[in-house]
Image (cartoon, rainbow, N blue to C red; front, side, top):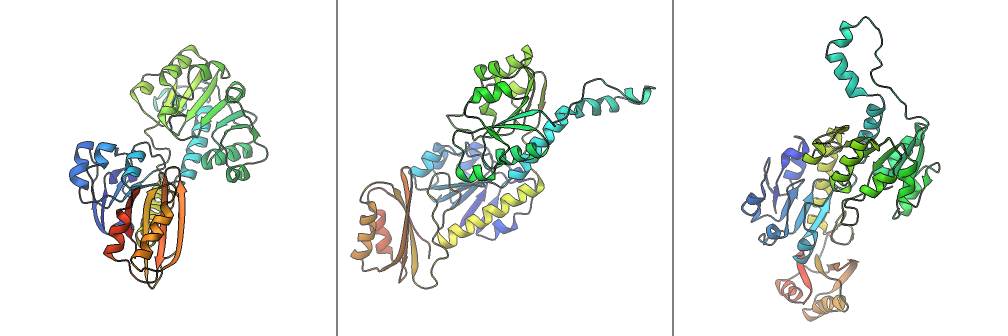
Length: 398
């Protein structure tokens, strides 16, 4: 199994020995879009953090079976193009939950305490030259008693909300798609608000914790910043596309937003006034990056040895446990259309193969079927399954 990691540097130099043991491994510090085809032409698995894998790159990689994103965000991979070619895409969901939560809380405290300003003041020599023991160049504030509006109540949003409650803040939570699992994690003291404008209008501090999708692009725009509480601070450690940069620049200049804290140093953001900008390091603690590598290793190992799918972003979750010690296991990635399962099982009858166990899961237009056999799968079986219209890929797991 050929494994290619396109941008090892993005994990901060952590130990990748676990991943390297899974197959014939090749790693590159960085990869440009023009180098992808040559470097990945024989790859079965490609690992990427930020290197984009668009349709034109994916279609020229005939051996590719699995794309592992060494991050949570997956907007750098063309999921539809991958699905059409039967290529599963997985991300490392949850690997940096605590890191991003701590970055968010830390940024809020640094903002209220004017840490950057006072650090620069002391280092300038002005403090040492002054005979005054105190310097109140900028007012200091505390989180206690303030109102924090949280947009998105997934794993990170829920942790931020609970931490803010523990710090004595009044927390407003907005998430029209909040899951039952996430709701159970939330402190009962969090006020669930169903209107985004209401959250913005009432909050002293606003943080965004939602994924980048077409429906969330520019969700904080001119209207939202117009209705926001005057003098509020906005913090974005999710994705740069969630905030309309032109609208934010105008709101900062007009004073409607006091400060914009972001993890995305785009040229537009760098030109804004009253910002605190980090170089996309909100998730990049040593512990989180190591956790990412462990998660990727375990998921790849389970997929290679057992065919199980976890944390896929374009295929259904499917887990049949360990592959049988005797016999075989076959995995079929196919279109989610009527009569597909009967066609697949019919082929087994045609070649005289007995099915001991099977599972079938679907997600949108994609479906995944795994079948355990009482004997190893044959080339004839694979050929007949592959010939079924709507079957994207057939893999002999064992």
